[in-house]
Image 1 (tube, rainbow, N blue to C red):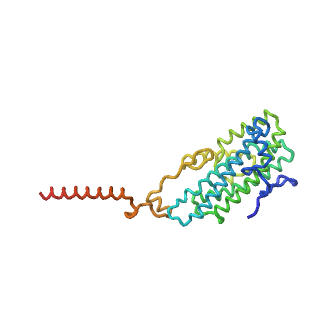
Image 2: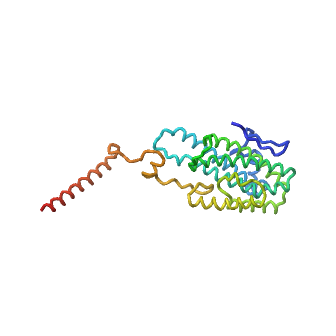
Image 3: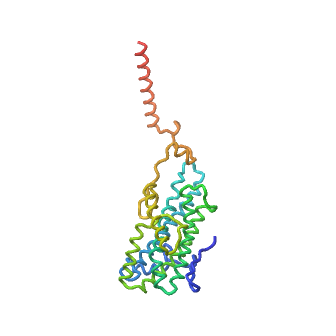
Length: 298
């Protein structure tokens, strides 16, 4: 598998195999989040973004584990295939919202303030687009799309995890430099804008909407966010920060459409209590039928 590379400038490159802290965060980011109340502390923008990176890494790890378990149960006729992609769906939702807000709120500020800011944010936008393409492939499996990618969901998830780890390291370096350059009020205003934008951000990837700073791109992202939130409610889709509702038990038609046998118990598999109840019901029905027949004959 090709490794992800994020190049901010000629002298700055990110490699996925570099040493990271827990959850894919860089040691610098992990150290900064421990100092709450200071620039780079847990209650700052760097702290919020570092926590989002850790959450995304944990969701992707869970998704990879679910996909491995799914591969081990592929021969089980009673396995519900809808249950094996929940973690992938939740990871896609969390990463999609995060990338959209970073591109629309944080990257423009960094490009205007930091030295080589335009080159650094352009590289991050490029990897965001590539990650969105990978997430779109996962979504095609989650939605049961007929035109699924050639690679399986496990391979897509592995590559997405590499991109996410590399992207997180580059973002945390960018944010650390940005907070050093911004003043206190300006940094707090940027953090407030970030938190407000997260509430209306798209929850699914839209790789073909563009990843620039133009007005049409921002309007398209806003409309995509409204549309995603509507579908999240109508289809009960997985969304980061909300409890995941388990699918309703499949009925006769549901198991038929899923290509699995029904869960009906045969008489040999029925418990003694079920067999006794069934026998009593049948004897009562037979007795009632016999009595009705006699009354008609009389």
